[in-house]
Image (cartoon, rainbow, N blue to C red):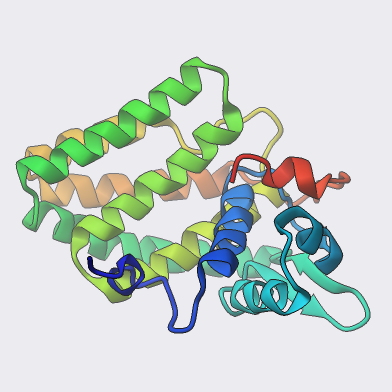
Length: 236
């Protein structure tokens, strides 16, 4: 049986199942806004939660730091990264540039199966929204964009998007307007329709407008709340 880790461009050589599990748990919690910027991640907490050594935990934390999800600070340890307003603008600009390239590739490579995958992702978003699962809805909204990167068929763009989506989730958690819906499902539905109709120009314009709208709803005010790490990582 083929090693699935080799097929995933986001998985680095030497990665084990347990440190990948820790890595994905933190990324998913960030994407769900359950671990906001500035949250301290104690090595001992991870050791207790996952019943692993500090060496394994540090390996996962090093990878998270490499992908700019956390910062490793002297005398404080690991904390969820806190992008500045300027970094936020630069990250969103980079993401717009990347997704403008991704959407035409998705359309060029579109198949009935890829369209079914997009529709299935949208159905999952709708289900989370109807069930009042805001954290799940937010995470699935980010995963929709990651799916498009995967369907584009370019592993380099896919790696860039994995980092950018996680960093955008940090930015939204830090600067979002309370109560706002940061990734409207209707816009995803409209984008899926344009992809199926192979309307490259319209779909490319929509993805840029979509990301500009998300950025426009941000405000420069930090959110400050304490987080229970066990609760934030539960279910991952």
